Image (cartoon, rainbow, N blue to C red; front, side):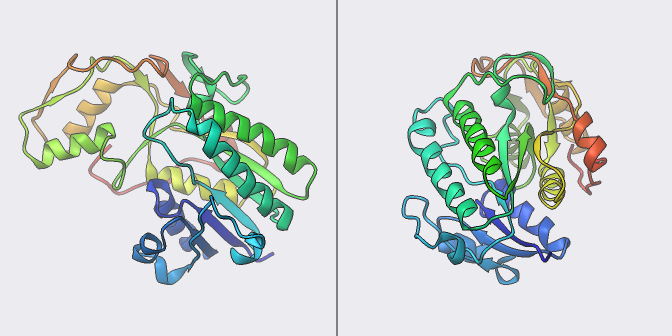
Length: 292
């Protein structure tokens, strides 16, 4: 079967990399997002079919408008600047349900949706897919509800659903508010020091190119269904990760630890198990970068 892959949220941080990874696989790609201007400004715009869609104004013939995709990689989600906002439950969840249900009703056969490690809740240690989700903020709760709704909906339709639970990631194009984007700005400004928290929290980071590559591998595997963590499987204290980043850049920037408080909306020490990921999809792609 020829694969015509729809990517939602294609102009977002992960979306741009996912489209590139699909094109390298020779897939036919339909890229969608809210802004036509942003879609047309993407470097791959001429290599894909760009179709702007506003989730607040879905056309009745959505499946046809989006070129009747065989596969969908659903990355779109709004309001990510505030995980505790009620709008994740009251606005984003029903919009995303309506969009995906309509695609499934139209005849979509394969669906991958990105979830979040925050679905596991305030659980510390290594997190694997067998754990029962206990989301502790509105964003994670909305994602968990969407997963459960889609599992039920696809069980009654001829559609295979995959849920890729994303942990932390970094790379060019990430939000300016993210830790490593702020660190890059400090390096560009030749700052002598960098303010951060105490840095003793344990996290799991993977480069966005590797995340995108895994998402594509999972999405195009027509025999796989269910939940899988997309993570490095590596537990590391954040201060050591940041220092490693600086060392690989050859920077002498000093870390000002303890300036900011630790976030209270995520566990202090947690990382993902990537055993299921590695067993099914193999090791991560190698990336050429002078960063971590």
